[in-house]
Image (cartoon, rainbow, N blue to C red; front, side, top):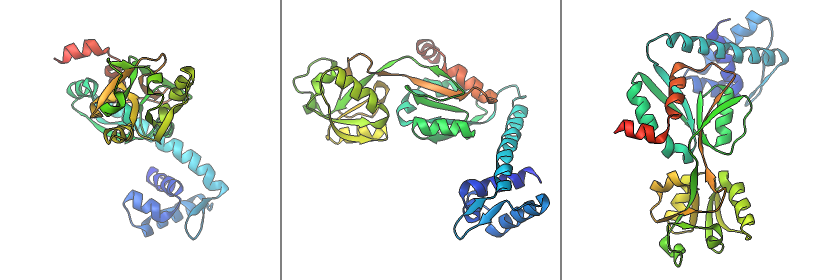
Length: 295
C-alpha cells in the first residue's frame, strides 16, 4: 500500500464512482480499477460495493478512507514543510475568496505580496463564505478571504478596517436625495437588489428603521447585484469596495451597523506554509502604511 493507491482510493470515494474518479485523475478507468483491486487484495478486505452508477463504502472501506485522508494530508504537510526550508516562500498558495472580498484582495495587498515573494504562485477557489469554510476544513485551501459576519470552529482570523455598505443604481432612483449618503428609510419604496450573504443584516436594519423593504431580487453574488443595478432594475446594496463595478450613482448608507469587514481566515489546528504565513503578515498590514510604501 502506497500514497498513490490511497490517493486513488480517496478519489473514488469522493467522486462516487470509478469512472468519475478516473476523469478527475486524468487516467483511464481500467488502471484505476486494477489499483483498487490490488489494494483490496493486499488488505484482504472488500473496500467498496460496486453499483450500476456509483460505489458504496463497506465498513472496512470507511475505516480506510478516514485513515487515508489523514495520511494524505500529513504527506502534503510534510512536503510543504520541506519546501519551506528555502530562504523565501515558494510553491503554490491556495487561497479561497468570495466575490465581495475580491476588490480588497486585489488591491495593494496582493501586489505587495507578489513583489516580495516572486517564487509563489496562486491557486484560487471561489465561493460563498460557507463554501470557503468547508474548503478550509477539507484542506483544499490554506486561507479564505471572506467577509464578516461568519462562524467557523477551530479557525483564526485577521480583520481589515470596517467599511460601509453602499446603495448603487441608476440616478433616477436617487432623485430628490442630495448628498453623498442616504439612510435606508430613504430607500423604503425603491426596488432593492440584495446579495443573500447580507440579507439578514439588511432586513434587520430596515426593521430597526421602521419599514419592510421592497426586495426586488435576491441573489448569491455581489457582482450579480451590481449587474442588475447597472441594467437599471433597482438599487444594489453592497460593500463600498465594490463601487468600482457600479456604473451609476453610489451613496454610502449612513445607518448604524450597515458595515462589513474583509477577513482572512485560516485553520488554527493545521500547519500553515511559509507562503501562507507571509501572506497573512502582508494582509494584516495597515492600509495607509502599505499604500504609502507602495508609491
